[in-house]
Length: 391
Image (cartoon, rainbow, N blue to C red; front, side):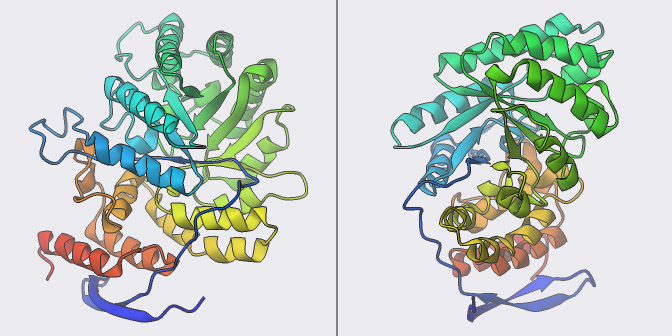
């Protein structure tokens, strides 16, 4: 699709110089008129409150109205919301009390939005690290969060546990914890295997350092508990591992891709199956993701790939190493597109990426056609450059 150049902005380049960049007219993505043929959830970010007196490195100050408004934005494009996950800075600024409040508000808002889907992260992050932490403590922590989310009327995404990774002595410990927790949930859950590239504290999850060996442990858990598991989201940024596991899933258990590098081909699938989606990048590319999924549902694979192709380089940039800082790029995109009035993040995480990273993100976002108001985006980019002494 040809897009005319409409503006020029000077952006810093790797050579240390400012270079002219021509911004093109945005693409217009229609909202879906019928359901997709893939389940699709976007892990959503939180909007910080810039006027709060709370210390940003110590307390989460959240603009609840803007945060919930962003959920409505995602729902309006036919996407479900994966709530209180790592994209919302869970474990990087968002604590359990605020996460539970976020879940409560999101579930309440969904009741007033026809067709809205919410699934919420339950973990063990309120469990303070300490010597002598035991498996029983991990189970109790999971039970507490699952019960609290179910009381709101919410569905559960069972998040990976730093505490379990720290105290488990063998793969059997993982089986014990998951068997116990899954036996008690009211509705089938999504299990989330978050790789160490997203959270170094989760290295060796499932009791095995090798991902293929860890996969065997996880599959044993899924097979024993298939009636209580809707699906498994794996975030390993390795399409071959995801496909290998997808082909081994027990009947009735869905693979939700968490691969923000290779999501387009994994969602399309192959002769043996496909992945549904639970992705952080959908927070940033919701209009394009929605249009692509609509095209796929209509059988137009050419349009599906034409829409998503430019979003893959953008996603790979946002999620580049250190991957755990991807939330900064997600919030930056929301700010450029006018969904919030500031580029301030819970935990002060707006400082986690360099100005060169933001400049390249701007270019890649423009390439996707997802800068909805180029004039606003350029003005905001210029203001960020000015703060960095670049004029």
